[in-house]
Length: 205
Length: 206
Image (cartoon, rainbow over all chains, first blue to last red; front, side, top):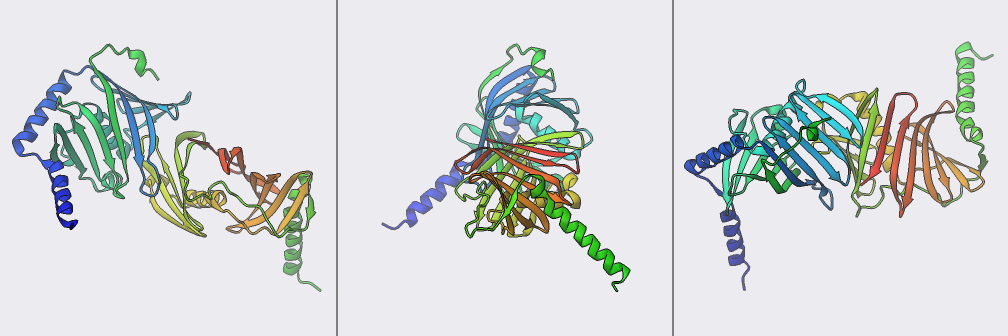
């Protein structure tokens, strides 16, 4: 049997797998994400990070916990295979590297500032009120994917596209940061708990 | 009669040679004839392996960390990438023989002095079969002399295991590369310690 119909079918499946949203669907998603963000006081979640470099045989995998407390405290704590925590507060990044503590003023560095914005946005997904990105909307089954493309030439040398994937409840379930080389960092969230009590001690450096 | 510049040059060369030759002696090693089969550096030599290390870098009282990723892509061809823990690429280098290509580097790190220094250090890590010019022995330890990118290095072996590479200038240790936790041609820990500048890199395999 010719492989041609199978190939056509696969191409068809691929193009149907991710479809562009129309303007009203995109507006609905934005409203849902914003209203969820407004009622979210705390989030805790597990995450698995996959760093894909095309020349490697396997993605580099790490995992840990993410904590968020409204309005702007975020903590990424890597647990395996290394202990490393970063707390973002105001314009400062506090690093705890296996007990060695350090802090970095990210306000002074435009690149870090923009990365910080993406990291914060990874939590609630609310990155719509900005003119720094070209935004496009896609749907795939029950999930929704929003693609942010930095307009700034310098920043786009590091991040070509930033994807946020939402579930049906407009919660962020994954993010993907794609570099111009097409290498990427893919972070998948699980075991998300919203508005549970989160002591301030979690965010103490 | 020799002119003054010639005499000065001769004396300088003599002092330089005497100083260079003194390192193995200072370490208590005796010179022996080079054998035909020579050892090498096997730690980044397997094309099927992804070498991923957690890197702690202390430089001029600043400390930062990341993931150092090395991959052998072919004969004398390596890719070396440093990323943050969150995956952002800080630099991406490619070495083919002595040719060093910068695929990407953070603007803050894009300094000639730093790139030269990294080039020399990485060349030491990835060179598998340096051409040794002399060899020395002390009990079951061997010391082999070579040149990489015009710098003098000594490779220190205990039995067949490469434990240390030292860059030496004027008889003094300039940079130490220390390999430990060695199993199946993989070093679990690598330390790169510079004596002339406050720079120390500690690598721990993930």
